[in-house]
Amino acid sequence: MQTLLLAREGAGDHIRNALTRTIPGIEVLATMDNLVSRIRHSSMGPFVAVLIAGSKSEFAAIVQIKWLLYDICTILILPDQDIETVTAGHDLCPRFMGCLDDDADTIVAVLSKILSRESAG
Image 1 (cartoon, rainbow, N blue to C red):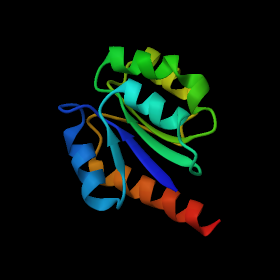
Image 2: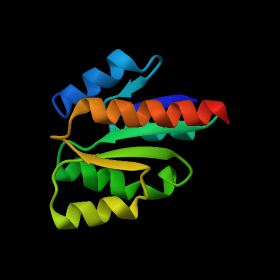
Image 3: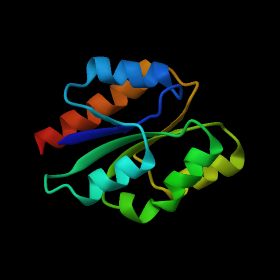
Image 4: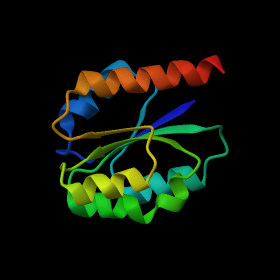
């Protein structure tokens, strides 16, 4: 299973660093355009995507591609815990949703569990 990480430099660095250190083969994408292109032009199997929204505008861009994420198992990291942000995050139906200030080890554990379940069938 392919694992994609959308994370620009400076946004959720502790999460990005923990994931890249722990998850072999994770592909880091720095821009939304790269993510969209990667998903659209991939002929390889299913994805797991970790989407780190470092700001409200980055989160708004993720919301705009909801249709593209429909069949992708996602872990969504929100820029804040405002009620509007959390509500909009739930509309994306992520497998797991956290916030930028969450512990990186928790997110690594969630992704590891998703990957182990997916590889088991």
